[in-house]
Length: 210
Image (tube, rainbow, N blue to C red):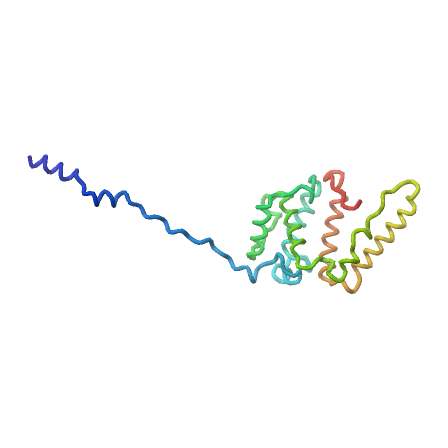
């Protein structure tokens, strides 16, 4: 009897102890980490500030722009659809956030999708508070002044003359005193990049200057 009673006592549990064993603690929700990028942000700020916060091996080129364009010029000029095929917006935004936190992404290292990087270049340019052409010169850089009409046999000679005049006009605008030196250097770097893409248009199927 004593043995049976002992078994019954060891097997029986109070309702309170059963309830405690089944109860689990609810994890305390954690707030998302907010990183203050006030002093490290390089996108959507004036060009000079971006350069001072993120210098690159090229004197006048902010690091995000340098890293992206250097990667495109070195590895991607033959890729089809440069700046035409959209990249992954989520990935491009992640790149931007990393740069804005003060991190430096070397696109020459690791694996990166060409169209995501093109999207980052476009994001950097379009997020500038003021165009590279500046407010003062913006109207003078109207695209219609530099578009060449389709060439025909009858206007071929005149077309060449017009093209030379337009190139001269563009050159004078870029080198005029109203263009800040930093803007000029970034513009030259970007236009050179577009020129390289155009030179490889048979493979990448992108005509930049038509």
